Length: 220
Image 1 (tube, rainbow, N blue to C red):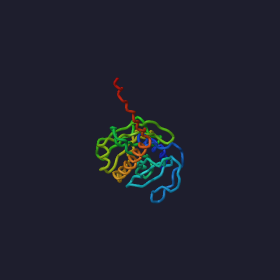
Image 2: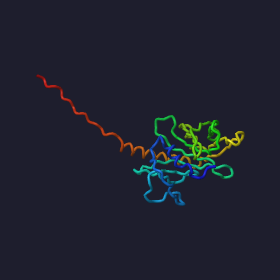
Image 3: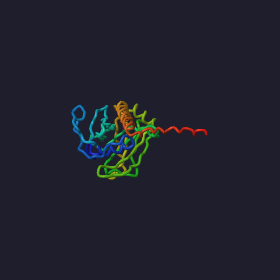
Image 4: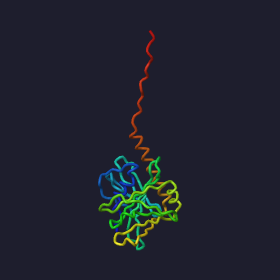
């Protein structure tokens, strides 16, 4: 069983790895106000904070030195008795890839690895995804969602997540990832991250070189 926000730094680092890069400086989590906004002040780069909420999702960002804070959607997934079991983070991906959204899932260490994690968007076909690795935080799976799947999530009700515990391999655990607020939330995440990528691109773009014109040799 996971504790809330235990895997947040890992989720941010993995879910945003293909987008705007977050600073890797380790820092304690920012304190959120009751409205979900982060506390004011000069937080160290790498400090995560909750920017806002959208339905059952939190819009979480991480402070960077240049102020272009990357963001993602985050949901703590609980079982039927309200115990936290897994963490689900999702963000937009730069254009030009087969997947338009990237997700990072963290499950308990007691998860059986070979079956992977199974996801089913409403009544769509169930798909399985491998685990990449496990550490003290939990077991991590990376998921890529196509444009079609992204649209299904924006219009859908929930995602059924299935994992298999080592202690009871014949008793798969089904969890529900709510899609309430997902459409508005991912639109906001995309807006923020695209603006960040554009700003960072302007700062890091190489200067344009103007080649000197070469005059033809003078006729003798």
